[in-house]
Amino acid sequence: MTIGRIILVAARDLRAERGQPDGLIAAVTFTAVLILLESLVVGPLTARQPAIAAALFWIAMSFAAILAAARSFDRDLEDDAIDAVLVLPGGRDALFAGKALALAATVAVVAAVGGALSLVLLSLDVSLPLHLALVTLLGVFALPPVIVLDIVLALRLRARAALVPILALPVLVPQLVAASNGTAAALTGDATGALAWSGLLLAFGILYAVLGLALGPAAID
Amino acid sequence: MNSTAGLRGATVVLDDRPILRAFDLEITPGVTVVRGPNGAGKTTLLRALAGLVPLAAGTREVPEASLFIGQRPQLLRGLSARDNLRFLAAFRGVPKDGVGPALAVWGLDARTAARPVETLSAGQRRRAALARIDVERGDLVLLDEPFGDLDEDGGAHLLRAIRVLAGERRRIVIATHGRPQLDDFANEVVRLA
Image 1 (cartoon, rainbow over the protein chains, first blue to last red):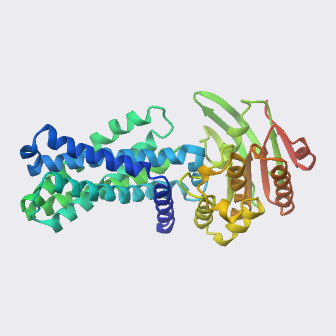
Image 2 (cartoon, rainbow over the protein chains, first blue to last red):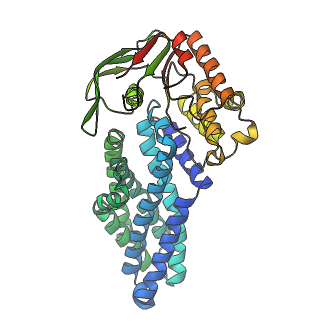
Image 3 (tube, one colour):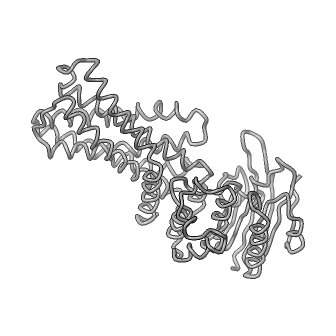
């Protein structure tokens, strides 16, 4: 497996998403609606509490990432486009890692839009913007390995749409806890807390990326 | 290409149903035609050779530069035919500048080749898929019902392309119901029951 081939697969996915942006649109729309609903349902005073705003943002991100990843694999299964990649030497490894990389880029866009919406709609004050950016970036990169692995495990099953959230969300709980707490810490000015949770997010991201690379290609069979 | 290619004692089980049992096939340079009724396992045999279905028993030996073109065109929607083929060429490390001429030879001009594949007709998508033969230059070429969706001209062009590949001593395995004339220049006709 080479970095070049992973980047090729990621670029192919992102170009296809640009050509048919239904995954990105679904993810952004879902995130925006969820943030808007939150402020309406619990009221603006409760909704703008850092812990609640952060938790809801990351729950929205995890579902948005599942939506975008599912659409990406659906597109590959239409016309059996995935077979052309799987037959290539090193195709399985590159497919898993490339899909995860492309998903991270897509989720980064969703996070940027969702984050901006949260800040505006909930009138959030950000005490440590650089720390917030760091936590968000690490949170975004910690999600894809788990989600792509779970989609690969359920790839040929009819119940894929229902199974993937059931498989992925329990495994994502540690990442969601770390990302939510890190975000809340960055919003409230707790630099030490934000950095500590960032370190944990980095560790989760590396752990699941290694696990995904070890299990994902074989799971495609 | 002197390396061997084929299956030895291959068993493939799908949904608890054995499709191939202890199946042996040695693929020699030239054309091998696979025939059989619906459900006989032609597609499974080609997918097993391509490494797309796991073997429950037996071994598979194929060259690294193997190309499998299935019954569906294997082109990613959202991308043009040109970009699909450029991606596959780049992944294999073969020149990407052969993509445009290959698509043109198969009847897709530059404008058509630049359109998203979902806007092409079934026949145009099939032609774009078959242009991979010229771009990727596989030592083993596996074609599953390649004449489907092709008009007379396209079918004739494919027959010529197969003859050229056979002349280059490449291994070509074709699973098909039709085109009995293929049997005339095939090394072997494998009949699945």
